Image 1 (cartoon, helix red, strand yellow):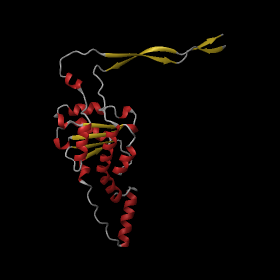
Image 2 (cartoon, helix red, strand yellow):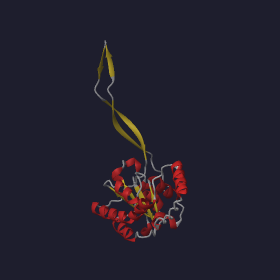
Image 3 (cartoon, helix red, strand yellow):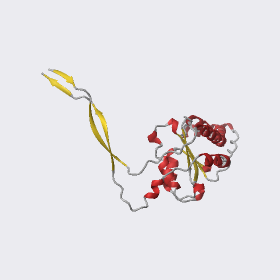
Image 4 (cartoon, rainbow, N blue to C red):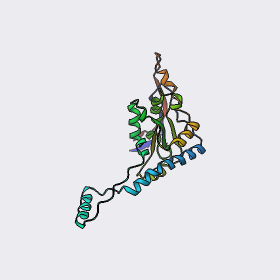
Length: 230
């Protein structure tokens, strides 16, 4: 008895979709992206220099205790106090989770309001950051036009460069709050070259209008069916 294979088959697969239009990332020209990245790195570099100069990599609690005991035994002077981080450190958030939590909280506190969010899209697949346009659009809809959060997606990989500037192992996104010290030049450029996130359908959600459920029907290839022959 032999087993023969039939040609590949196709079947229709149904997928539930949203009746609302997809929110797109703001369009930023490659030249503007490069200029924005340069200014962003110049702004963040002092934070990385501080970490490099004064932050020692952790070797565990036991190693720290042994080092402290050794200094006591040798009568060594205590280390001088570490100078505080630049003020900018309190005005930025780093990482997808931290930024998303702040946007999702929507506390309404103007002191914690973001003015710009930068995402290294070139280093990630879309599922890791595709929610940013939606959540930024939702977080900006009650703000005045000149105060709406600007979202910048870098199409070229730049995660390693941002990591080096901040002195952190991995950086994929950075958010800067309004009135961050030293960020005025960057903010002026971003507001001039980057449009706010267009989320027109968020306004339509206030209307009492029924929207039909959207169901996508696409053809998918199914593996060949094996047939036994005598």
